[in-house]
Image: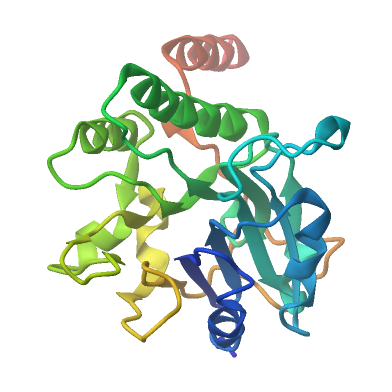
Length: 283
């Protein structure tokens, strides 16, 4: 169980939640929000997620299309979020309409923060996979712009090895959205993927957040336990981010009870209009 007011996040490409259910249950014992990628569930099997642990609620998306009673699409993929029931009053599910991502808006001391779970496309060395990869970042930005959230946390399988063309797209996205990859900033020489034959390893799972949220990060690491998946869980702790004494009807927006504008998301036109309004009000 996490300490009072902290939020412990863990992201895990489980490569079939049915095969790794005991691994996921173990994660639930230690973390408050679990991001799963590649759960491999069909749409009518998503209820399995809510039965993994008695202390958790869940929601997710399937990568399989079963319209017209025909199963189309790849029989793998899918994303899901499990969150502790004690955090339920702070969590609002966001409909992303995209099987490669699911999200929730979480009420924090800083205000509403968008938590996004992603399973990014794999590079198949063609233009289509590259376009799909770029498009996913556009979808993340679009969801962030559409919801009432001032900061964002993105975690999951980014499928961008060091030196790859997808890695360049990843870092451009971080720069454009003023985000920081927390694990790459605070860890060194780790890997989150190990091939079945043990010959290949890479660091492709990440936790990313708005730069303003960095002071809340007090712990981060990779769990090297023997698991059913070829990925290792990556975790981070956000200390004092949640006010557990806050009621659901009167959520805290800041530790001092004040609301702050997120000027990092303001355009030049927004700033000019604000200046004009200030000038008009001072006359």
